[in-house]
Image (cartoon, rainbow, N blue to C red):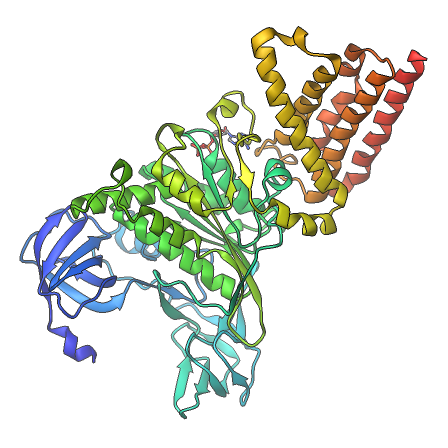
Length: 594
Ligand code: ADP
């Protein structure tokens, strides 16, 4: 079968940047990988017209010209899935950057052939099944401790089932068989610790479930007001400098996910270099070990053409699905999907397709929707009915922060959470600059039950109460803007004060402060209840005749402002005691009044 194809090379007829057109390509299919030109650049067929193939090339095509050969592989663009994914830094087509750097210096030589996963490294395989066991696709045959933070489960590949004829404990490379499965037809299938999967094809699962557990992030504005579910989708659009990258890093560090896949599609080379330098230095806050021990990083390097961003998005989500299939909670972060969309626009333009809005191809929204639809909470393949979740968080960087941008709009049509970063807030140094008025989470209601159960019903109520106060503040601000603060009644002034405290004492969170950087849901609930307790007591005191200024100037408010800096593992009780101090302060104020 392989032999038959080998002689059938195509020939380049045209090169236009990353787009190459080749003739005599019959036999190849859409999305097949081909090697282009004399250096054998890696490309993917994105259109077939008769025997003409349009090829998106993932390496620089400079110097490539007509008449050079195009060699088909007859295989779709695929990733290798197995031990070695974690801690790796890959480029968009899963070439390991560290290995490449060693072999060719800092620059990636074009057309280089390197295996995605290390072929020499040996892993300790611990079987969980034994000879004679019946297994089906997705069943876990055994495990490998890939890093101190991650156990890699070796699963029966898709399409394979039968009885285990042999399985071995021991130390193996990923090329050595660890088990043999005899299928119904009596055929013996050797199982290795890795397999390949076409990136554009979502990995199968048994059943999709409604996401109903919160993916806590430790970021107060997110968890309390706009939570994302495990298996959910979120979009963070925002102008340059509004904090998209900081948010993504915070989520990578603090989100309650076991595996992180970070896809960096930076525009300029140095943005990517930042990620490559910063990420390996991040610490997993729960264990103090390097975060990379549960992370796969995909980075488009500056010397790869924009087209590679397209591949990186699919490579990343496929790796995410693979860990989901093991039953893990996985978070995939893509920063920024605008760069991916721009790559689509460039290729589409060169193919002279009919442009849609802002020159983006008409299929932009379909592609974006297909990407986010790969998120979800699922029952994985296999007889154990494991549940796995894949959450997807995409940053979008529209020009000038304009939310009517087609990429933002297409994304908002599919994702369920919208964290709206605003430069106005960033300018005022209110971080995270997530607007509490424009953001939303369509999971909020469905998560209430589990949040109430895990934390308290009061927390759910407090969150609603606080949001109403913030909305009232926005309306009052309008009045103040028109006729001045004196137009407000004392009650309205208190609403402004209460809302200010929610904003400054609760929502404002410094990502770079050792303690403030993360707040557990429990601490969030206590902090919010204290902030609201002050407001509610102040409303009461006002009714009892206490002067507004005295309420605004209460020294206890200083303590409320410092709640965020109280270390939680040691001292949650000291946070609780602030409530008592508030009561005492109000009691004495009211006493004076009598
Ligand atoms: P973007 O990726 O949108 O261009 P960044 O994420 O690089 O923006 O953020 C720009 C700057 O804003 C950061 O360097 C930092 O100083 C500040 N910043 C953003 N978010 C926070 C935060 N949560 N806490 C403190 N500072 C922040």
